[in-house]
Structures are given as C-alpha cells and as structure tokens.
Length: 128
Image 1 (cartoon, rainbow, N blue to C red):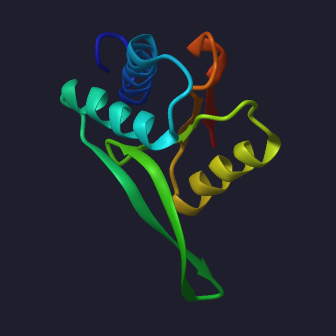
Image 2 (cartoon, rainbow, N blue to C red):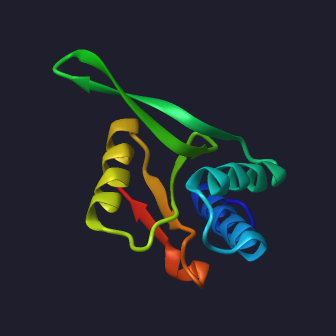
C-alpha cells in the first residue's frame, strides 16, 4: 500500500493529475505528439519511469510479427496511455487500447483525449 492506495491506483492518480496539469497549461488544439511528450515529462517529474513510443510486437501462431505497433506512453512498465487530440473518441480508439492491453499483457490503460474543453471529459480508464 502507498498512502492507503494500491500501487496501481497511485500510478493512476499521478497519470490523471498529470493530464490535468498538461491540459491546464496547454489547452486543447495541439498535435497528439505534443501532448504525448508533455505527459511523459510531467509523469517523469513525479519520479515515475516513463517510456514513449514503445514497440509492441504481435505474436500470432508462434510467429513474431513486426506490425509496427507502438504504445504512445508506458508508465512504470505497468500502465498504457493512448493519447488523442481528436474531435470525438470513437469505438475504434477504445478497441485499440483494449487490444494493446491484451497484447502487452497489462491490466490498466488510459485513453486521454486532449481536444476537449474540460479534460475530465477526455479521460477514460480501462482495466482488464
């Protein structure tokens, strides 16, 4: 336990707080790559390990397929962040994150759309 929270819950809180900070500072309307970089920076400032553009191989029928899949952000080798800056989140965005969680064998992920007036409306948490 970390201050009454599990490690995963503590990471989730830091991720959400980081998204609020990035959105408060930059607002909507920028490219996904800008938000991705800023999120990674904000999370790293909190002393949490973070990796950007992590290659994700696809294993099919015993074969490793280099499908050029990349996780936007991987936090503490545990939580996947899929960063968007789109007018509207559509089902394929959710399916993409759920598939990444399954392929990477991770339990928690966040779909964060920065192109919203209020960031709380742009954050969705997923768990397997």
